[in-house]
Each structure stands twice: as C-alpha cells, then as structure tokens.
Amino acid sequence: MSGLLRSCCAFEPYCKAHTVELRPRQILQFLLLDAEFPHALRFAADQVEVSVTALAQWTGSPRASALHRRAGRLAADLSYTTIEEVLSEGLSDYLRSIVSQCAQIHDALYRQYVGYTVDSALTGQAVEQ
Image (tube, rainbow, N blue to C red; front, side):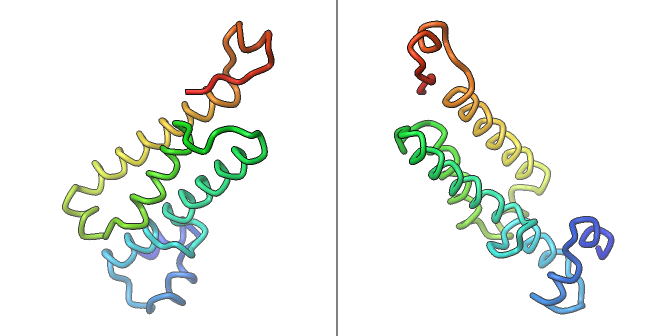
C-alpha cells in the first residue's frame, strides 16, 4: 500500500490527512475522491470542469454544450460518490466508467474547439454539438 501511495506522490499527504496506519479503503478514497489532494481523481475532474467553464466564457461558447454537461456530470459524480458505492460496483468497472467518461469529454472538447467541418472552416466557426 505504501508503494501505491508513493507512486502517486501521495504518501506524505495521505499521512497528514489520515494517519500512518495504511487502510486500503481510506487509500482508495483519498486517491479517488479527495477534493483537496491535487493528484486525486476528483480534484482533477473538478479542475476539468473549471477549465471547461473558463474556456466557454473566453470563447463565448454556450455553457449547455455537450462538453460542459459531460465535464459537469463527471465532477458531480465524483463529488457525490462514496467509496462504498465504488467498491460495490467493483473498482475495475468503476475505473473503466471513468476512463469512458474522460474519452467522451475529450471527444466533445475536440468537436467543439478543434474539429471543423468544411462549412464551419470557411466561416471560422467551431462545430457545436
């Protein structure tokens, strides 16, 4: 367990937040669902949502875009999920779901800000979905 925490640069932050006693459930909760640890999945999802919102404001894109909805849904899911729910779903299945949601966010980001159709390239407008 200490190897996992060390590989995530999380051993010292975990010990400060909890104790030196390493409990698998607490370690998973810390790495997945902690809102303040910068290497935690939830922290990252919150930052993606903040960035997508800032990008929408900067570009004048609608906040109700597929990208904004997907990023918000991932952040909300991680905010309200408990470690018991993660474990009851099965850690592998849960993480596959997170990877799938991240891929959907990537695709929506690409469609909205990077990918252009021929018509939108001629007018200079990004594709909105």
